[in-house]
Length: 155
Image (tube, rainbow, N blue to C red; front, side, top):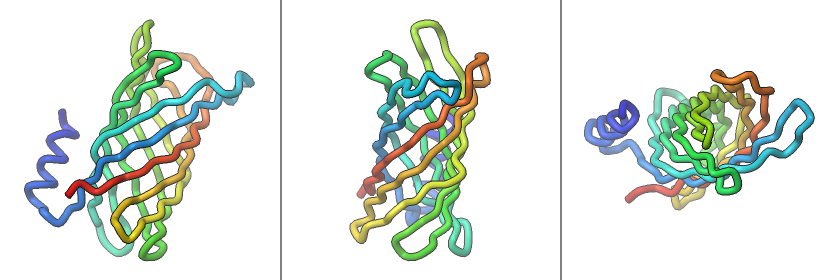
């Protein structure tokens, strides 16, 4: 609810803040030896808020689903992006993830030491990143998550 309020406030107060619809996929790799655990698809709104110099904050609220496991949840991400050029950004990608399974809900903290975003002239952005996930509510090993996503501007 708070994130929805944030997006509405940004959109109404700053008409120049670009809003996008974000679509992506995340893989989950166990660091304790299990290997590939599965993948999640996600989508939801994001905004690009310039905070000065070449820095921008990109808040994002997405719905995630894992078709193979039946998991689903919400992801709140606050990407910090440094524009290295007009088309390339270097990203720090922290997230809080609510993952619901048939057994209950897990809360996950995730952070990526970096990612790369390419901004096309059309305003579409394509990103690749990686995160390490720590499950707060369960005693599970750290996972690594390769991520690919596309953000399409909302006219």
